[in-house]
Image 1 (cartoon, rainbow, N blue to C red):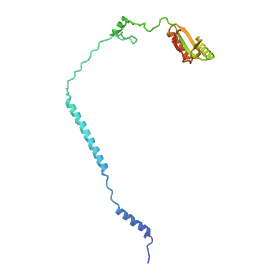
Image 2: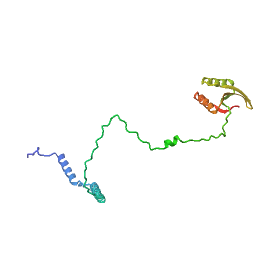
Image 3: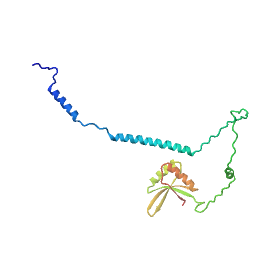
Image 4: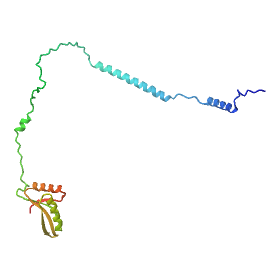
Length: 198
């Protein structure tokens, strides 16, 4: 017996072929997905409806606007000969149409200044510190002297003991005292108070 070994398939390959054929036969057929097709058809139809609406609206708006075909007659414009313009010449001065400038120039303003609450002849003093020890008061007096102002150290006795006050003044007006206080504040002392001179 002669066997044809060349055309013979191995047993394992033959079994593998049979199993692959059987799986191909038993595999279910793929169905086309319906949802994407429905979505695409819906989009195309809505786009077509939108185009139809746009086309209808333009026709209806054209119908509302009456179109009149008037013959246009073109007449030649006659140019008047003008003198050559100087490129450095200034344009004419515009005329003013405003009247409020004249009204403001001729208007008088009266201001009533009440004298109540204003002390005309009073002098002011500024106290920048009050210390128990005279040395501390003299240190503040020296700091104020470096700022260009002259201070005094006053000793006062009261019910709560002896105090040394650092006082500046007298100032002729409260405005002068305020200027002095701003100068001292720029130097770093923020404890000054302004009072009437006593």
